[in-house]
Amino acid sequence: MTKHRILVVDDEESICEILKFNLEVNGYDVDVAYSAEEAMKMHPEHYSLILLDIMMGEMSGFQMARILKEKPETARVPIIFCTAKDTENDTVAGLNIGADDYIAKPFSLSEVMARVRGVIRRTSQAETEPECLSYENLHLYLQSKQCFIGNEEIQLTKKEFEILKLFLSLKGVIFSRSEILSRVWEGDVVVLDRTIDVNITRLRKKIGDYGKHIVTRNGYGYGFEA
Image 1 (cartoon, rainbow, N blue to C red):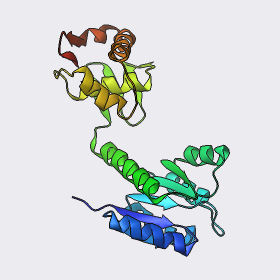
Image 2 (image 1 turned 180 degrees about the vertical axis):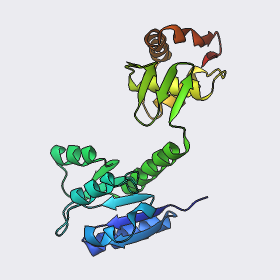
Image 3 (image 1 turned 60 degrees about the horizontal axis):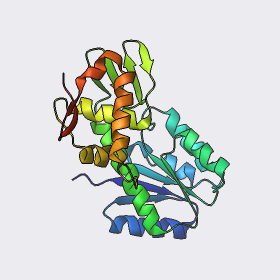
Image 4 (image 1 turned 135 degrees about the vertical axis):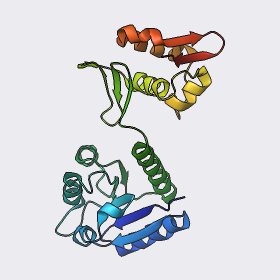
């Protein structure tokens, strides 16, 4: 298994050391930088994740993140802002730059580890999955989260998109409601079978003639048949 490398960027040495120790205990390779300027010289394109403070020296975390997202070689490196700036505007600003998550100080180490695992898992999956899933003239673009029939964009909700992604990725496979629930709704607390049925009914209507390929097997579940 590939060992993920993480770069911790914070001007507080104690925070860097605490994060470095705990991340290494959890199996990550970790380097630290005490300023954005120092971090930019450490080949950030080689890291699986950057934990980045905002309020630092001459170059802020926001400025560093903008530079990274503008460069092709670092644009896909995930960033988690880890900072005492925790207002809603700060959060929105960070996410608009392209950050993958945002943790406000003071933070619990268990929360940091959970966020790190989640971001690395999501980005690792994105790197291995295809850019587009298609059937005839129906195209699902996984990075931009768009659905097209020909040149016409079809507006899907997040759940409708994820259901269609599941079906197109494994054509001919019939999924039970419980399987759809675990793959599409994941951590959501309460989801009724009826909710799944309603989402699939709406999806069928939205994709027009392709809706007939979403089949129902009574007593078993749903799937996409070519």
